[in-house]
Amino acid sequence: MERNEAFGKTVIRIALPVTIQSLLQSSFSVIDQVMIGQLGSSSIAGIGLGGKFASLYSVVLAAIASAAGITISQYIGKKDKKSVNKSFYTSMALSAVLAVLFMVLCTAFPKMIMAAYTKDKVTRALAVKYLRILAVSFLPMAVSSVVTTMFRCMEAAALPLYASIFSLVLNTGLNYLLIFGKWGFPEMGVEGAAVASVAAQVISCGIILFFYKLHKDMPKLKLGMECHKKRHLPEQELEAKREYRKQYLKILGPIVVCEFLWSLGENVYTGIYGNIGTDACAAMTMTIPVQTLIFGALSGLSQASGILIGKSLGARNFKAAYEDSKKLMKYGFIASVLLSVLLIAASPFYVKIYNVERVVQKTTEGLLTVLAILAPIKVLNMILGGGVIRSGGKTNYIMWVDMIGTWGFGVPLGLLSAFIWKLPITYVYFVLSLEECVRLGISFVIFIKKKWMESIK
Image 1 (cartoon, rainbow, N blue to C red):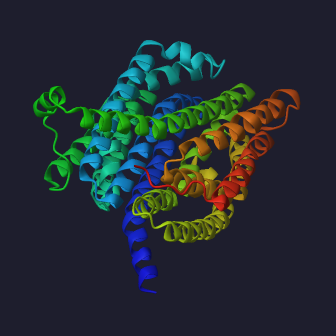
Image 2 (cartoon, helix red, strand yellow):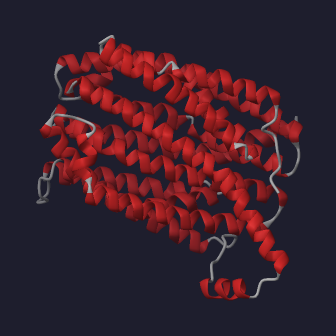
């Protein structure tokens, strides 16, 4: 009984700040969408398409943060502070390189990128403007992501939450001022939304770094000393470093491949929606804040599962890891069913806050109903695949699960339903989303066989 209470308290300590952070972000995202929605369907679609390509960067960055979370949590379980620091700095360096690469792509080739998403020239031009400005936020986002992961592994998830609250309020305020040109600010429309997002990311990064500097248990980097040490390391330590890098890449590689291919699949879906028509694309974009709200509300459980199960595996407490995993999945399923019921009840009211055509509102309502039906399956995949199974370092398992689901089922079904069967957008979304059932079935088999339960060296 005492252990169950302690487990519950730890879940709340990690999951609650992450959940609140995600819910706040989702709430402000809804406000952002409503503001942009006053400018019409083309503006909504333009931001949706520009943001979808930027999500490629976000998911690969999340992959690096996920690898950091796996290794850091297991090393904390082993009480190996030196390896904890190594994981932190390796992840920070990789994130910075990734940010620079995507910044170059989005500032140098935005027209080429957006041409693959839509034939509508007005929507494409808006998406290009949005993406080019948004790219400036990539580097501060990289720094924030890795430091936030470190805080969460140390069960100090509340600190990044404070930064998010301030930056999200700032983002919403700047959106109002810059999109509509209030209080003497220029009326910038879609570009104003991008500038607001960049400012919010920079401020958030600054606050997180402030907390990082104040926290006494955070690793402190001394570049000069590190470089000096590398020249005089004995062979045994050099071999240990090589083993660490090999293991880190073995964990990171499949996550990056998995997340990139999954996000690429999501971008293919967006291309399908965009080529069905601007109204269909706008309707799908209007569902994004709600998707973020639902899955953000339960993202804390996914984060907590990866950290808590990782620590148990690091301490070689395999029985606790397995039993706690089942509890976390049960919590997620019950919560997702409740949220689905609320979504079905609220969707007719949600669509009316957008200044778009009635046909777009009705289409969005249908898409939200599909989302409500599939939400429990998606949440179980998020907890099981995104947290539990990965916590043992067996990231290649989930890589194959996602590749089979997205590219073996989702993409082919999406292309068939849209361009061969020529189904409406609501049915296209439902058919391609059946990939989630395939993913869940394979993941359950992996979970029950327990081969994912390993303690990394």
